Length: 134
Image (tube, rainbow, N blue to C red):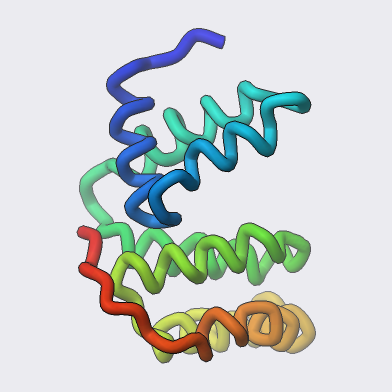
């Protein structure tokens, strides 16, 4: 795959800010023997290309992705990861719950309940002192 060093560096920086230092390397290891291009696409295109765009801050973008995961209904690992990323980006527990609850009439009661159950431990964890990411 052809890579873009500028997007990769920007994407890796954002990825580590939102998901924790070393998270990008963990994704790379996880996909190394299956589909390494997935890592490049995720880091460069999704993080360095889309998430880094102006117009929405990281907090808002993560709330949008949480809503998408709830609506899809089968993306539990991604829902959990983006919930933690939203908290790391400055979203409050209440904002995340409201974003999920907003989908009750669009995604359905079962999808909303399942999402809330699947992120309960993340939302109920003691708060860490973290800086907001813009």
